[in-house]
Image (cartoon, rainbow, N blue to C red; front, top):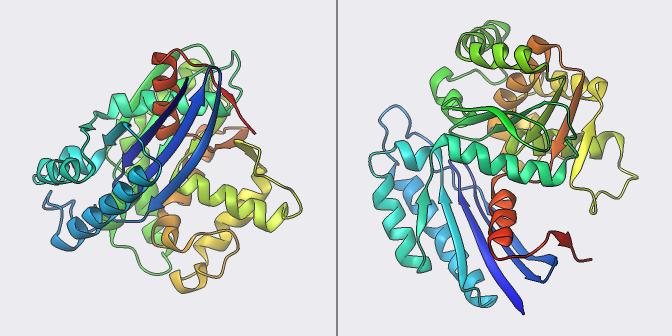
Length: 318
């Protein structure tokens, strides 16, 4: 019997929908869409989704409804994250979004978000028995998970996502050295527990998921591996020398110049500088030896959990 489902991830910066179909132990992805709604833009200081951002979010939900109808999807798993759990009008948005798609949207805690990210990542990256530090940079929050293939040792969600830090620091374009120092000082103070737990579990590899890592991975593929076909790979080892080069290029570029960098999506330009500073600082602060970008994160974690609940396996169809 064939089953079909949609996973909807309402992030602070980007809304995602993934439509899958499975039969027995085989599954395939039928469709997916990401919409850069920037729901958190201007919302953090007052904890209120602005009128313009609210409208962009509703427009995206109408697009999602069209996809649900086109693919005749009846099982829908919808999740809201940082901005929807913090904004005073977050529940108003959720109710209106639910009325559009005709399905429930669950606003999840940072801890549950981290667990779903882990389920997605471990399906894309062979973690083995060694603890890895998993990092997911969203617009509103950043999740850190220390885990191997069998279990999570520690996880924590921090409300220091890229969009939130952009609003907090209002950096120049491009950022100057003092602004970079201020951001790194802030990260050093905020992430003391990350430093302690990583040392405790002796994690040596950073596994990155979502936004900034997707961009860095795409840029590295375009700049250094353009001859490779990456469609069938769900994780990518990032050469640290290449990352250092990409980091310097991004920090030395204005947002206008960033638009011309190969592999960097236009809608990621606004927050990529803050994102790569965070990645670079974590790598250096912890002296990590390896970086892996995972194509799977929260929505794929939901997908695999749903399939397991439905008694399906996880072998992907061609």
